[in-house]
Amino acid sequence: MKGLRLSDRVRGSEFCRFERSLLFDPALKDAGFVSYLGTRTFRLMKSKFTDMDSGRIYVLPPEMTISPAEGSFVQVEVDGLYRDIHLETRADVPGPVWDATTYAEVGAVKEERVPLPPPTLPVDEFLDRVSRSWKDPEEDHLEYIIALLMVSSPRSIMGGGGLGSEGIQRERGLLKGSSRDLANTILSQLPVEFRTGGTSQYKYSKIEGVHDIRLIRSGRINENCYSLVPERISGPLMERRVPIQLPFVVRNAEYRGREPEIDLDVLDYQLSGLYLPPPPEKLQEKIYKDIMDRLRQEEFWDIPCIGEIDRTAGPKIGLALSRLFIGRSFDGKGYRASRTERSGVVGLIKNILSYGFENLRLKLKEEDYLRSRRSEPWRDRLKPLDKEIYVQLRTFHEEQGLDEIPRGSILPGVSQHRIDASLDRLNRYGYILLLKNGAIIKLVLSLEPEDIP
Image (cartoon, rainbow, N blue to C red):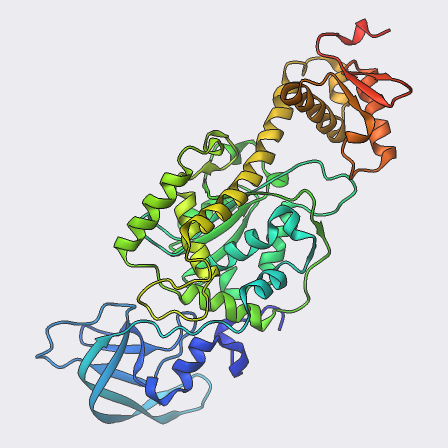
């Protein structure tokens, strides 16, 4: 199943429940998404992601003045059928062969709501399965980051769909995993069409260079999702800013490795989410205003990062959450999701954004603390863990007024040997003093290295 192509699907289990109902329910024989062949003829597609149709070409009569919109979901009332039998030349068959095309005379066309049933998995199981490559993903909200990037955000009054994310690098002690591993986790679970150029409405990309940004900007994908991978980012990339809605940090979770095969239940859930249409524009406006009002005063909007923070991130994540929490059923009238209470949605958005932005703030704080001493030769000898410990000590001083900090309160999840080595370097270069045989650390705020006895 590795490298599954949606266009190659042949088994019923490879299609989501909605697609199966369109393909095999006799009542939906003449229902599907409109795809025009000419001004008066069209096909009814049974999937947005493959070239499957009803097997008929529908012909609009001259007296019908209103035509269905391209891509709309409709139910056609057929007045009559006729077949055109003709000779065809095929590359895989020697000589001409007889073929027949069925034409359906359209009596009436009715635009319908998408009859979308709930996916096979409950949402909690979906969150668990997409993040199984990680140990303790909930520590960093990674299960939501992965899931939201997979179900995407629809095109709306705010513009193009999709979600952009940025991984924030922090010292991780002995743990393994990075934002690049998270991007690979998502890519390993996607069909080929969702991770290549293709014509799919949805695409996920891993941005590791300027070339990747060019590819994203040159494409015409309705829903473009991507992750900036900072460990591969160089100066020129930082000058080409792209919008970011989901800052995230891989800090406490641990990467286990990729799943060997695509999980068809996960694919069913993702496709179901991608089929969920955006709310009506009036409801979109209400969602936009409500979420923006609740998030407008949050301080994390003012924190800079490699990507360009999108002020509409809240509403876009809100639309993505509507897809993630599809709930028991969707009848097209409204979003009867598992989390219809707006305050619950806003709370979840705040948790995700605050965690990512807080780690970004600490990262920038770390750089600010050390930038003024960058010219000192001994400064370049500090390691990432040394800097993180120094930032933590400065935070204790600024937020709690502490100049002397107990040794046991420093990064309890990191090995004692590594912390001892870092404290020794910080002491040697004049950042701290070690008191009571190292049990107490005193922060040095004014001394220069040559002042240390």
